[in-house]
Amino acid sequence: MKFKGLLVLLLGAASLTFLGCGKDSGSSKIIGAGATFPYPLYSKMFLEYKKVKNVEVNYQGIGSGGGVRQLQQKTINFGATDAFLDEKELKEFGKPIVHIPMALGAVVVIYNIPELKAQLNLSGQITGRIFLGDIKNWNHPDIAKLNPGVKLPNKPISVTRRSDGSGTTHVFSEYLAKVCKQWEKKVGVGKSLSWPVGVGGKGNPGVAGLVKQTPFSIGYVEVAYAEKNKITFAKMQNKKGKFIVPSLKSISVSADMKLPDDLRVSLVDTDAEEGYPITAFTWIIVYQEMSENIQSAKTAKGVADLLNWMIHDGQSMNESLLYGKLSPAATAQSEKLLKTLTYKGKPLL
Image 1 (cartoon, one colour):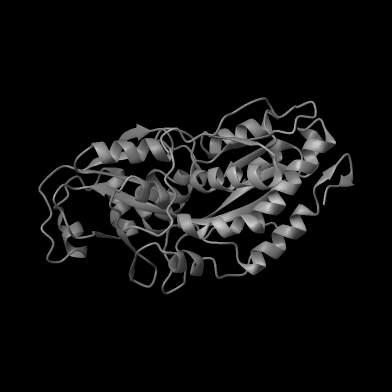
Image 2: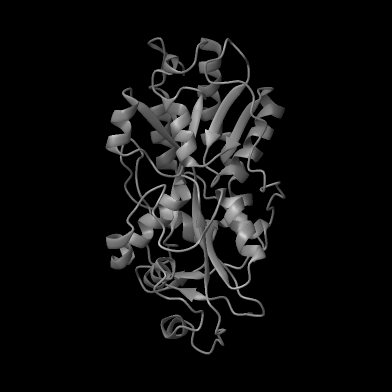
């Protein structure tokens, strides 16, 4: 399962050099932190931006929860999250926050079953029961039913999940809550969860590394991490009953829907017949009035220009890493949102 042009990245570190802080004094550096889900894409975008614009973007992949928290604490210029802020979180900020989607991505269920050559079929219901600890062995009859003719090992399943506040976890748990009633009742949805079973890994790289090192394990990561680490992932059954592999097409069709004006929207459990069911936007979030966390007009303008470049020229990098591009409708609405960004009341774009 290789995709052309997949950039070889040092995903284990999941961070670019992190210098300075959000409350700057006119520095040309732009500081961001948050989601590891889009880190492969952002690292590529920011390296290219330095080449073409001579502006350095320092981004640290600390998880969506950390990105939201640091933006609220005003120690960074922008945050990154795979879970849009809900009404409670928006009220906690106290000031308007703008969400700009940068890409579509897929969360995949990865597994390490030595000597198994077939690609597993899984459903959300079965996956939820595995992560609840209800299904404990790989040769469980309900897994076998989805995989006729496949010889499954009589081995216990080792569950791996995130230990940090994670947008990837939010997307994954939101999907499970929609398709698995037991999950919705016992665990629910969130960036951080009270996990019934499993070993925690920090960031997408941590989960990928644990699954790769642990025979008979299962976990969930953004698809680029599975590809980079050569970890097998399951075909997931969608709402139409089809087992779908994440691809540029199956990810993109999942977002073929009417988008809200603020672009805060869930894409999981798509109605699209060929859509991959664990698909999500990943967003960069900023204060609408950027003097809230940025001290210089120059840096505020730099952040606005960066985001504008990312939704236009930067989109050319998405597909090489198996992230879907923004649709024309999403791009047009993002442009409108960027035009609402101000510095001391003056528009930045």
